[in-house]
Length: 280
Image 1 (cartoon, one colour):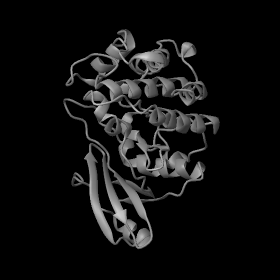
Image 2 (image 1 turned 30 degrees about the vertical axis):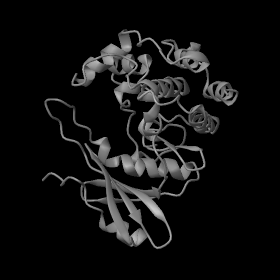
Image 3 (image 1 turned 90 degrees about the vertical axis):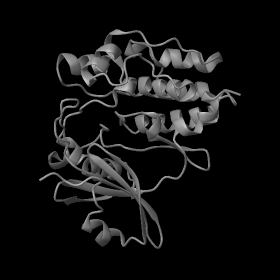
């Protein structure tokens, strides 16, 4: 029997949090996110379910385990998170982060109303550099996972694919790759050739550069049809030069360096942070 969609709020959430209000945020293949308010706090609750195979997409059992894995990662990073199971998978609860995504924040730039806020770019680079300095890689950097808070700081969310600490076998799974729009060439190439790969700090930097590029211009860094199968998308990323970086000035040159096809030629996240810290 297939789980219903969106995934309902599991009974364990009510036991753990005692909600006073609930709002559906997103419902995607394998994941439902709820905004849950309690008398004292606000939480993001993620509910996972396995994804069956279709003609357009491969199945992925790991989607049901991902919320539990993310909670373990957050705990290892000393961030509050709890998790549990429901009949079709796992769920987690973590602090809610208020603010727009980088893509949402830079909408006026894409419409030509004003230049992008490089303060936001610096905040995103700082959040990634801090994660890397703690010995972790994110593995799924994309604009929707970069939240700019009211105080101007950035928070990296969706850490289910992160690598860097001891995750129990019961909630672990091999790295499946990320949203292809932000994969680096070496990640896409390895997944096509061997089916396995591990994210690196260099692939995170590439993904951040691709996130800056699409958020500032509205264009993916590599051109392929929107409805192309994932293997076709990955082949394009692995073999096709990225689109010309049209972002002006030093920021555009920084994005160009971050999108280098050779991992060793990319700046580190700390170097990206340093460059952006000195932007006017």
